[in-house]
Image (tube, rainbow, N blue to C red; front, side):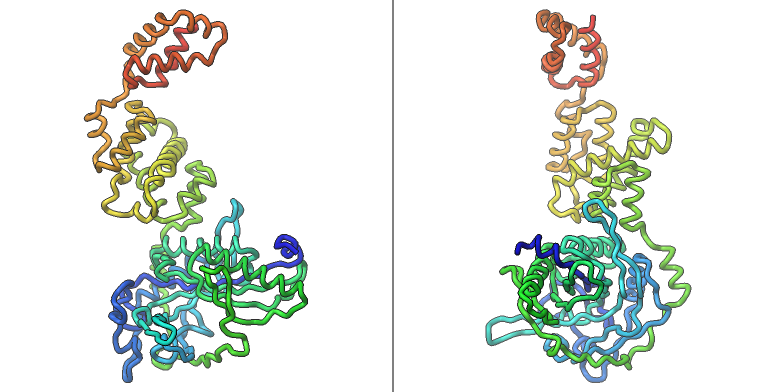
Length: 501
């Protein structure tokens, strides 16, 4: 039975647990650096290592980041939450337990909104809770391993969804939405390659139409959107194959091997740890004052979905363009800066209509350049925020205005942009140096047009007889006559008038 036939029989039920590393300078309970990339065990201290006599102290910035996250998803931020000790024995856990939240998480409920193939979706959240990260085991040889505790104690928000996701594609898009949201909030860089965003997926199948949940398996520590999609697709097929053979699904934890494209059993439910949670005795309840909550509520940035609605509403952009511009925080901020610059340097060119039409025209013009020309020159959208970006928003706006003023054609402007990117100079400097300014003098253009028409009486007669495609011939001759610098729009208008005579 093929995969399509299998999924005609079964419905996938998927829940994700996403670990978001918060972008703080120090760790959640100590002053040790939380920076990535140091020499092994360089970012540790007695608290991180769990040495006798040490006590954890809560990082206030972690608290505020978690609250902002909770507000962004529309969850209930608890005025008082608690930490607990989660016990398990593994070398990456220096204290022998992990400080986490269990029965009283900092955020309850909320939703993650996103779009899948243009359709609006939302997945409810069970909770968002705070915890410290563990260290990292490095397996040097089959007989020796090392532990790097640099990551131990780094603050995490764990985002637990309800089991409302129904496909691997939806799971990947949900994960992208979480990453996009935390990056807009500025609480995490969402860098999956560095482990700043990791995902566990709980997957089960049930017959189509059934309401009871099937037996789930957990896929651990998936670290890319591609791997999330492929791991879940593989697990759905694996479970469907077992069910078709009349075999029982074992509740277990499985590890995804991205290189081989398969998963392997890590431990069964019977082997799962009893974490022996109990309240953390060294930390008081985490109390959020009303004035703190009010301050954080009023300082929230415009979030991706709100920005998408504004782009596709007031700015009149298509859903495709709105989605592309809001996909990454840096793209949206670059676009916003170009729009603002156009309203400044181009106010006498672009802003010629009523306010609403002004905004729409400016937005569409900026979107066209950003999506089609700027993004073609960056491999990573985050480069748009770099201080040494070759063409910043204001310089791009200055180039766009030259097109809107008919000083440059669109083709010329693209050539100028390429030199701007390469030479890090302004459009004005390059245009002046190369003598690229487009001729818009109607008298000069008309003289060239008359010369061409008079020189080609046979072609003019054929055009007047209905050979409309000859317009390209005449335009080409006029552009050649004027060294390629005539305004094409003016050339077309004048030629049509002369050839109509």
